[in-house]
Image 1 (tube, helix red, strand yellow):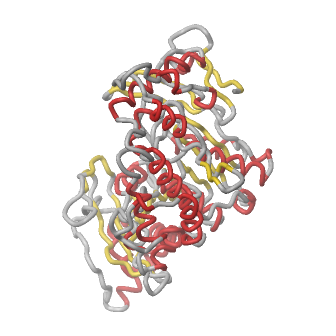
Image 2 (tube, rainbow, N blue to C red):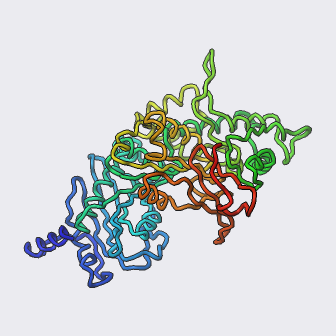
Image 3 (cartoon, rainbow, N blue to C red):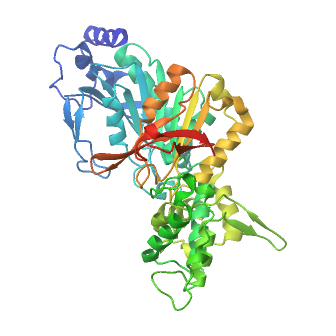
Length: 519
């Protein structure tokens, strides 16, 4: 408040010469100094930042701008807040949009930044609103471009760098300046919260800018990202290697039911969820057609495809073959196989090759050459998106905490990709960091960031709050599954290396009847 009051006094002494790009004069809580001070934030100074809006928003509903013009989805239940929008230009080709939302009353003294998905290109308004409603001053960015493809990167290497790491870092610093100016004090704790691209963004922050955040929640992080794009295209090309090799979507359920029949009971409970997919050694040949092709079985070529989908992507040279990534798909993901093994590769990954690797919008995925294009992709990225460093010692040395989570049934970002990174971090920084500085929670039956038959709903921020308060990562996190609005199952999420085991009595839909035990 001191800084805001100082700004107001300076404005009055200067004859009120403040440029406000846009403002709303119906202030919430008219007697609140914070509400009245919101518009003064149009004069906040921060290197490379131009404030474009300082607006007081009444409690209740808010309709954000649409992703590509027009109105977005209305948001309800929000407290009164000060909304600041700004443009950041750390390079001559940068055009990074950010929004900072700050509650007029009830601020918890903390800052929460939220991440993006896919190729970013828009503000994550829903996540921004959720953080605000929980008492946080919150911020989000479009990372410097609009649209859901990599087209922005063609001829604009600085914009690609903005997406890779610079936009989030610049937003983090600018948001803290705005928060400090509004409340008269800096946030006492800074938290990152994101999934998918947002998970990668959080981990990249810990790697490149260890002082930006005190705590990071990274869900389904798409680390080793350019490599991941190449693997996605490779797996689709393999699926369509011949006219009869692709598995029709109508057969996905057949494979899934066979997997459950073989492995569902391995964890002691038959519930349609694999607690530990790595323990499932299902062979698709068990459902190979004995006669003509039918909807209830797989042809020999389709069996070969299914086996490959469950296996690491491999590279073959004249004298050897070796794995170049962990398996992208695990038993239990079959109902989502259309994501990577459908009629064409994932659009996100094709876009990477069109606009970043070959710089040719007409590039067709049928031209993908696994023997050369994986290396070309990593080289073209130049360490922007693919950069993944397991040495998090500088982040941990500051007391930083990294909570990673990932669904075992994720059909888009490989769960084992995250396991690999977690294990690399532990090997690099040492085992004592586990539970103190870093922890991984794998979620049985959860798809990409959410969804699936597993218990996909859990309070990540509350788990981090518990960790901060107690000094150790939670031994369990309570998770639930809903059908409609009804909670029909709860389970404990366990730290990686442990699984939830039924105690042998009581409902198998009640977390109280499970305990976490070593795999």
